[in-house]
Length: 474
Image 1 (cartoon, rainbow, N blue to C red):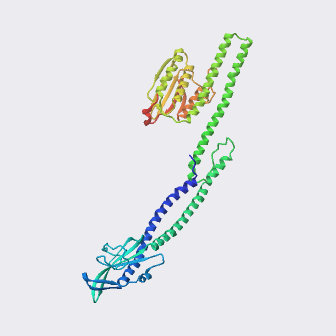
Image 2: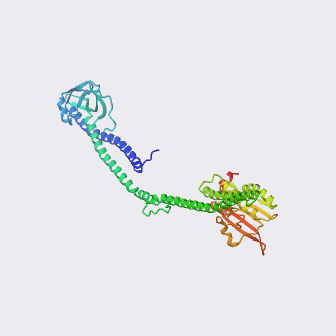
Image 3: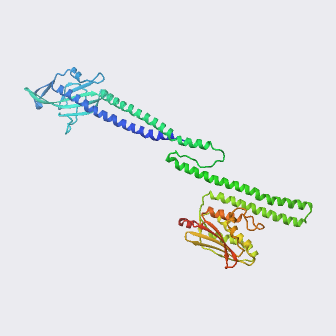
């Protein structure tokens, strides 16, 4: 779709209704002006009819009355306004018999209105005569002389050129002024839009002048209030982009640093095997262990990056944390059985608005850490419970616990409590996931008063809304 400029949008949105209103107003004005002119010129028709009626003569009375008229056509000249207007008359009795005038002028068959517009028995109506539209005044004129008394019908017709011309002139004068008003409106719209978008152009120039990678907030103190939501949304987007860019930079730096070590070890082992310093079987075992550690490290780093990716996506439906915990416990059951741990799990439905992968990665890392640090035959438990508007995932082991000074640092990437067995990414992944879901992750040592008896890793997450409880994804 082609982009519509704001100027054109306002011009079309304002001028179209105005032009439509002008058209309607023009039609109404023309009709009103024509009606007003008819009222004014009808007085002339009535005067013409009365002038003719005064020149009538009669002999006989009532039904036997014989009407006579000696009306020269020049008598109507005084009532013709200009050369464009032509007037015609007809005088007849009540039976329509012609007395004088134009015989082909249609005979009047109307009726006098109950309240005529003037103090006379007259009716005004429109008709056609000799191919022209005419305005006709039909006057019932009593005629009385010493020799008789009767009633005459005097019809005077006038062509409409003058009336319609005057109405058109009134309309043209009004349209000329209204057209000038439309031009003024268009000019005002153009000027106002030009001034209104000036702050937008200023913001555009400010953004274009920035250096590559500059994601600092936009400063627009003079921007109108209507632009504040756009400025705030842009600043919010820049803030999220800055966080994402910083995360990517940290990830690339950490990846380059952390993968260098296992690759260097792997190269050393290969060189040692090629020189024959170790037995082939032992070399293969060492190479396999190094590859396993490098693979685990790469997978965890990819998981850490995936957490940031999923944070930017919408969550389709809530997931049941209890079902996820049972599934992960089943997946890790071979590790639990290998160490002969006394495993217990207790859950209750706990819908969480989160991606299924995030909940699985959180539970897997916490449970895997607990299994790795538990002594053979030791107790290990997983519990999912609801606490008001929150749910808790607690993994309890019987390991040595953690030092208080090390507890907070364990949430940082590549900070491990045991450099020989861990990469330091498991808890960092868990912490990022919990933060992305708006929850908290706490590591607490359990004691019997004298010594540490184990560690409780508790993730506290907000429950999904009640509307989403019926849409839990398993």
